[in-house]
Structure formats: structure tokens, C-alpha cells
Image (cartoon, rainbow, N blue to C red; front, side, top):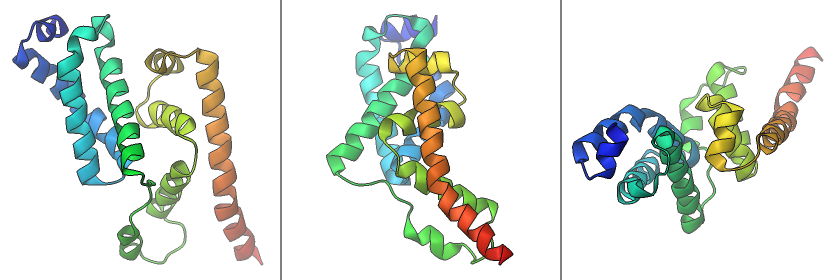
Length: 177
């Protein structure tokens, strides 16, 4: 109902729809951009694109998926346009105490490892584990077979495991000696 009204130009209906999705959208933008200003820029540009293209949405039930797809495509395009690598802001490391692997440190290691894997793996992992989408939803969202999504999730997890294995296995071995 709201999507139909938004398609007919009802800005209030569009605002209500966006209000329901804004937190998920911003989190996803931030996961890609790793910078508050860039995430906000991607978020706003995505809203602008969605508003201008809402009439292209074929199935009203897929509004959330359609909107997230616009956001991810915008984030990837922005990263390419700026030709910048997503990396952990070094100021964060200055704020963290030099302790054994704390939850924050492990989270930062995971984020750094996520930055180092291919976009296709990063996208499915973010959608699956940060946004809690099902494999079926991700497949519809990315317009690819479910088998491809499962393969990319498995390969992405394997890559993360390999990248993090050196960090945590080496530390544990050194602490035993």
C-alpha cells in the first residue's frame, strides 16, 4: 500500500518507507565505507536514486531488497570513483589499549580481513551475517542462483578463516611457548 502511494508521488509514504529501512541502510553503508561522512553520502545518494527510480520497482514486496541493492551498488560505485581502499582508520588503533585480544580488537581484525576480500564475497557475508538475510533473499537481491550465493558465502568464510588464522593461531602458539 505505502509503496503504491510512493510510486504515485506521495512523498509522505516514501518517507515512512525509508524510516523503516534507514538504520539497516546506514549500517550497510558504513560497513562498506568505514567512514561516517562517506556512509552518510552513500546513504543520501541512495535515497535520491530510489526516489527517482521508484516507478521501476516491479514487485512492491521487494521494496526493502530493491532499496538495499541501490545502496550497495552506490557504495561500490563510490569506492571505485574515489579509488580508495576501505581500511580501518588508524586513529582507532591509538584509542585501543595494548591488551590481549579483546572483543573490540577481534572485531577490528575481522573488519580488516573483510576489507581484504573480493567484493562479491564481502557483499554476501555482510548481507548474511550483518543484515541477517537468508540465502534465498540474497539470491533474489543479487539476481543470482542460490547455489552461487552459498558458494560465495563458503569461499568468503574460508578466506576470512585463512586471513585470521595467522593472527590468532600464531598468538596462541607464542603464548604456549
